[in-house]
Image (cartoon, rainbow, N blue to C red; front, top):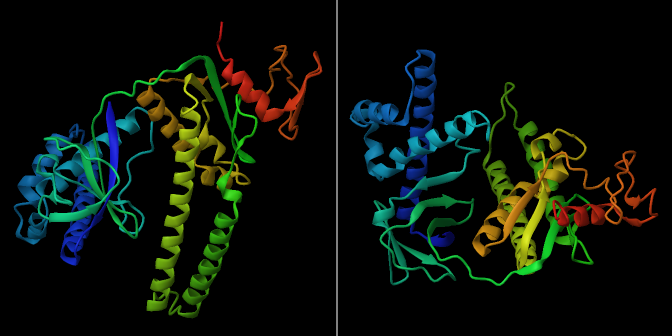
Length: 376
């Protein structure tokens, strides 16, 4: 079992410059490889990561105009082609969109770290070409010869090192009589069949609402400044605009961290109930996002991240994870007698059974049905 670890780094200014340079080199190699892949596709040359990597090493790395690529670890650029190959594999399997060119403004600031060069000693971690970087963590990091997929990433404020290592599966005694059904929603984040109270959404809390209000105010200020500094139909970015945009990025970062932390707390709460299985609906999240009235709320709930965390925590604790069929009518079926109510509308928040007269919250009814999904 692979256990993921994330530690915060404290690089010096010189080390931070090298880290940003590594991010830039990784992005350059990825974009170059993507352009070459598309070019080979048009010429019917059957592109592959090996062909592209070989051509990059022979033409770009030996070119005197690209000597700056040698200032960072060779693994940074080499692994960019691995990422490109993975992106195409996911695209061909229908798991993601067609690979796009990485933008300096929008793409994630991260790069691959050579795994066999990582050494932890006296509160520092050795990273190839960057040196010994101080770090801070609450984890007990085992001293190993190999760490899985180590990467450095920058979230707009701090640098982090993420990696995985082999860990024995948790031996937890599960409750063989407890099958948990989870119904995700917008009004309440998650309704659990065995809990009296639903898990509320963090997006309606005072803290998040204040941050969103501050974010809107700053965005309006930036918009007005861009209009005020417009010259010949071109927007001019002043130092004040740069300062405001930095504040906006930090608010986005804070909101994202609040939501991720809340999802971790929610998933931990569910897993600690020690059920033998957890059942959820197979949500078409990309399809739900097409609803312009609900898209923002769905995006803020981070359903995909919730499902991802539930999956790996179930695997880690030996819990069976089941996704119900996408067309399973969990909301329309009565959890008491099994009668199906086909005329149930989205606005009907209370489920009233036509056969047995059961009156129950619509989402609670759905979670009970999911908990009983395919039980003998």
